[in-house]
Structure formats: structure tokens, C-alpha cells
Image 1 (cartoon, rainbow, N blue to C red):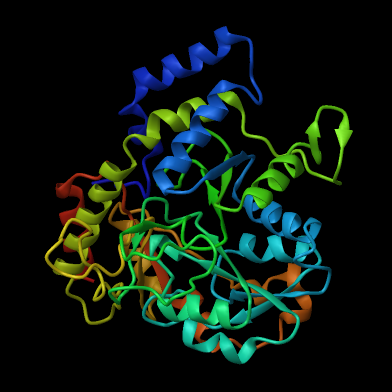
Image 2: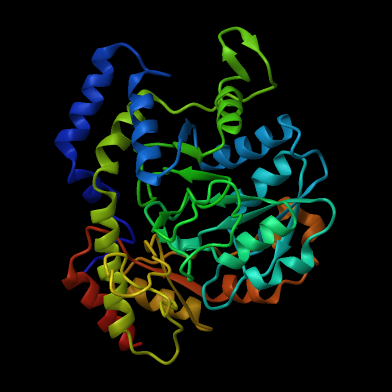
Length: 396
């Protein structure tokens, strides 16, 4: 077999007729920016996530940049303020912070989940800390009641990097939340989508994401009216009214054609995430190789299982294993027609872009980056292909 890591053409071919009609409709409309299709997608996304506002923008990095820039304009943050962020993340999370002349404070992940270790946050909080930026890495929810309590205790904003986890759910582990949750958190323990948990969230619709455009696109979601209004202006040259510029803004807008494509594909995201879950569960149940560490899904329960408390749901943007023989395994899989990728080979603090951090030591983060390997996973993989991957890995 020849198994692609992610067959984007096959994914989009499922919606070929709808996508072609959407493109044709936009072309025929003669309106290509800031039109009705962007408004329509924003409304659909806000409804899907369960928030008041969704603001479309050019990409996922801009979504995070705009959130922080808006907080600066609103006087919530200022240059030099600190943002707690996982050391184990894609560099875009950190670029959004430094681009706004804020200071990232790197905190180690949990080796089991690869997400920010919430138990390690408090010791990194100072009087300059203004926010915690959580990353739902690989599609795995990073949230807890303890995180909310901590945010309230220190009056911190919580910003979600939701680039990899659209559609994932979280529900509190207890029968009710503490009496005064952070802004945007409801009091009842009903399932909540990532993107609605914190004060604001950034989304990426890069083509390879679970909800992928046919080009670059992103969005911000929030329940904060003033923040939403400010972000919308900042994304359009800092202008709420044409040729009147209130802020020093960006040009970060979603094209009408991408909004039209995303409206087509958003209708199918839960179905596609469920298919990803089937692939992941087959991997977890059938890969038997003592050289490998598989993802921890011990907290995973189905959102449809109403008879038991639901904790976290994972949408499996990536299926990431660990092994000390990563390079050998990757070469072996390549030889057997299985394409894999590494997410990510170099941690942010070891990148040349952040040379002043290169001597920092984050051993858990470094271990993860030196050992991880992402297996093929997508909503268009056949179970025959999945079984083939398992068989080849078990014979390694």
C-alpha cells in the first residue's frame, strides 16, 4: 500500500460539487471581501462553538495576534506583560505573544497528554502575568476546573489556541462549577466546545486542519462584546468605519471564497471528527509494540454517553506516538509505503528565532520533540489502510 499522511484531495473530493458551486457563486457575485458569505460563516461558527461572536481573519496566527493586540488597545495588557504558554507547542503560539511585545513564560507540558501541565502554572505567575494561553494540542482538550479557579484567583485572562481542536468538548468533572467562573464560562456542567471555554480563542483553517479551507483562513471566538468589536476593527486596518482608523491595525481578512468553502465543510465536521476517533481507537486497541508509547486516552469518554460523567473529548487532529527509535521507525514506515510526519522536531526555545532561549532547559518538552512521530489519520482512511499501518508497526 501507499498511504498518505493526509489525503487532502480525497477529503475535498467528498464535497466536490458543493465546493465548486460555492466558488462559482462567489465569482458570479462580484463581491470578494467582507461580504455576506463571511458574515454567514461567522454566524455558523459562533453557533457551532456556542459563543456570541466569531470574527473571521486571514489565518490562525493572526487570530492569536489580534486577541492580544485588542487586549493591549483595551488597556488590559501593556508591553512587557507576561503570558504563560506551554513550552511544547507550535511556534505560532509564541510568535503571537512576542509580536505584541509581550513576554512568553514557558511552562512544561504533561508527558502523558503533551498539553500544558496546569499544576505547574501557579509557580510561574508574577505581578506582570496577565493571561494564560492554553493550546489544545493535537486535538486534545487542555482545560480543568483548577485552571478556571487559578485564573479567577489571579485575575488572568485565559486564551485558547484552538487551531487543532475544532469540535472538541469539555465538561467539568464536578456537578457544578465554582460560584464565580471566569468570563464566558456557564454555571451548568453541560458539554462545551473548545473555543467557548476561555475569554477568547483563536482558530486556524489551514487546509490540513480538521476543518480546512482551500487556502489560509482563521477566526477568533469570544463572548466579550467590546473585545469582539475591537478585534473586528483591528483586522480591518484598525477601522470600524471606512477611511477612519481608530487603531494601528492589520490587514487580516478572510476571503469570501474561503468563507463559502468553510460553510460547506463545517456541516460535516462532527462526522469527520467521529471518523478520526474510530481510526484513533483502532490504533490504540491494536498497536502492540513495546518500543512505542501511544496517546493516553484514559480520560476519554463519548459525549453521547449520558449515563456516565463526560470529561474530555479528543478530535484527533494528529495521532502522535513516542519512541526513542523515532528516526529508524520513520524510515521503516516510509519503506513500507506509510507517510509520517513529526510534530514538531525542534521546540520553540531551541529555534534560531529565539536564540536568547537556546540555553534554557525544558527536559519534558525536549523529550517530546525528540521522540514524537505522527501516524496517518484522517476521515478518509479506510479501515483496511488503518489495519495495514497497525500490522506494519507491530512487525517493527
